[in-house]
Image (cartoon, rainbow over all chains, first blue to last red; front, side):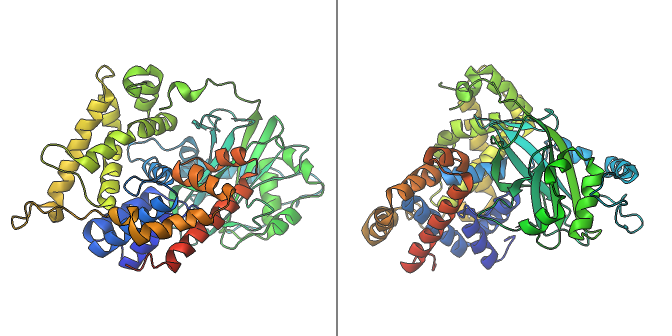
Length: 298
Length: 191
């Protein structure tokens, strides 16, 4: 039984070989299910992957290194038996409602953010989250670690982002903007990243969908507190819009309470109740001195 | 190292816990073995002819091996390669039994399945594909080799090329677009 139509299967085959597009376990499962039952699409897949392999200088019979990474991405997505990441556990409705209540009680202060949070529809603050961002660190040897549980990420490592959006939400976000704030420093743009990108990334509902890149904790980052800010919206936000919504001077924002930052962004960007503003406080730690992974690398 | 999980206790324990780095190391270490099982077969099975079937089977084998029960079942004493081969045989048997496509055809018991890859190794198709590489600059060939053929990460490639990650990402995207256009212009993808 084919799980997707022919055109969708062809599109998934193209996506599989496209480094600009993320590849998930759901994509892989849908494509494989269709190919198992459809001779023409299987032939098209065979031709596409063999051409790709030959084009990059490999053996047409052997998947390329790029394909191996795609397959690995699909495999190490959300396994049914795996415990959900810490962030997702934190975002469970009960915990989220408590957090939302605490956020609502926090009193914004300072001369540059609004005296009160913008009006919210009754019940919005305690609703189950429709979207959330996950952040993990990747060390120099490619090993991944949980940033929130590890109390931070090491300078020189990379930040890997994933997001979850509830497909059943009536107004699920369609765009994601991610940046970082540190006291005394200008905003650190992660997605989009200037100068090549200028607006939010389009996103689709899914669980633990990895963004197709990592951001290095470059020397622009200082050791100390780092707040990762995720803006899930139903319209794209431009860098200019977000930059304009931040106070001048922006460096002061890095030390502001999360609730105040969220209120400021909602107000400055005119975000409605369907937008999700998420702040993940963590720390930038000194460069890691972890052992070389060559001991375990193949 | 002959057998990663048997010989490296830290990797074995991390794999049992399901830590991503260990699972990646296992995948890369044992991928050749799994490819050999799905491509060359075992017993009376001569391997899957179609790349799609081989990729599907390899994915299914690793998915089964990465299940918690399978991770915990490995004793750490015998070679993991043998353990994984057992999983691979079971998964392949399930695939063969579930799909009528793989049932024996009494009318053509000795028919060799067509080799999909053969047309890419010689003749006009091979010439067209080789022409693309010849058109690339040295830097582009480096991206083709490191990123696409060897599977380097974007970050590693950026460091290797001395570029920012975003410049590298742009280079990769532009190269991929050219690859697509080259294939389209030469009649690929019209099946």
